[in-house]
Amino acid sequence: MKKRDLICTKCKKTFPIERSYPRCDICNEPLEVERVVTGKINKGNVLNQTILERYADFFPFAKIDKAISFHEGFTPLVRPLRLASELGIKDILFKNESQNPTWSFKDRGTVTGIQQAISLGYKRIGTVSTGNMAVSVAAYGAGVGLETFVLVSTSLPPEKLNPIAIYSPVLIRVDGDYGRLYFDSLEIGKQNDIYFINSDVPFRVEGSKTIAFEICEQMNFEVADYVVVPTSSGGNIRGILKGFEEFRLCGLINKVPKMVCAQASGCSPIYNTYSSHAEVISRVENPHTVAHAIENPYPPSGNEVLRRIKENGGTFVAVTDEEILQAQRRLAKIGIFGQPASAVSLAAVKKLRGQNLLDENDTVVCIVTGGGLKDTTVFGRHEAKIIDSPLEDLNELIGSGRQGYNRDERR
Ligand SMILES: *Cc1c(COP(=O)(O)O)cnc(C)c1O
Ligand SMILES: [Zn+2]
Image 1 (cartoon, rainbow, N blue to C red):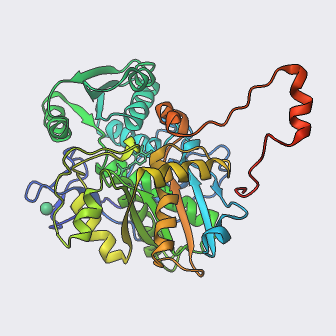
Image 2: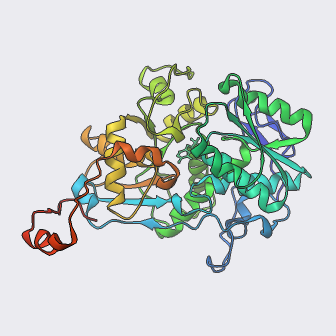
Image 3: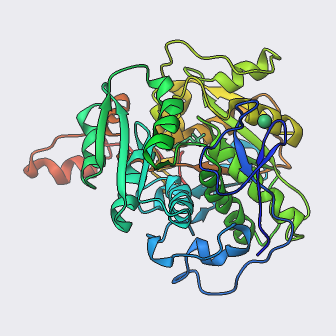
């Protein structure tokens, strides 16, 4: 295996791959692992393979520790029967990341992050998160027996703390500016030999590449026109784009899809920067959206996402809470129960179709980033139609047809 460097996404300065600090010394922009230009997919049966084995050529690991895997990835790509014609596009498919061991795509970047931490000899790992990433890192850290530090903000409610605490990490509620914690944690990690696997660090981005790899395989290497990604820190969309680019460089596909960076209008720093023709992300004050998993007001990969998606020919979009909730209900009816952040991709497709940025010739893949049971408080935002009936009256009620049934929204 050829040794790869870390490269600054902005100034292109190179750093050794062993470096644990994930940003450039000069411009403070994110680093990434050098692109793979020759590689192939390893043969084998996905029923007993891991993503680390199947796509080993695309990772800079000298040795793979199969035992750290919880069998993340290899998630379904779902094609509903009628939704494309309802939307007026050629085809729409959903990459259902809720089918991961801790119910979000974060597991892919956690396994690659931990593999790197182990390769570098770390005994302690950590993350800064309010939700899915905290759960994922806590679970995998427990699985491999590394001391795992999870830093959360004091405002985190118990229904979000408990699913982290079950894995018994060192769970610390930090009183202070949560936005600063991302950067401070990296410094604290440096001083205390803790490998922090935060949202957009290079090895988390490496894990997200496998979403693109699987989509290519699942579509027989015919590439969709657009891939829509609910975006917060920007790590996942960077990884997916990098995955498609590496497959193209390796000759496995002949074009790269256009990426859509989809955000919630209550917290859309990347979209705002794009639509105001600015070059540098500014912080969103008082973010507020039902899509909590994508509520990062100052995304650490924001500038890079802006640069790369513009180059890629993709676009940016923001959708309202109402549009998100409607999309969440629609997704449920194709057998996918995503959390509000996940539904942002379908809501974005509807919006782009309405603006004629998508048309009847387009094939679109939506990433459903995480599962709906992770966020039960949102249930209160949906109307729950429930009929009460005494047992004696049940037959008559059903026979009368009065209970109603909406046939419009099917698969
Ligand atoms: C983390 C997360 C996102 C955002 O991913 P980024 O890499 O931070 O852009 C979107 N949806 C869900 C469900 C997530 O957990
Ligand atoms: Zn730089």
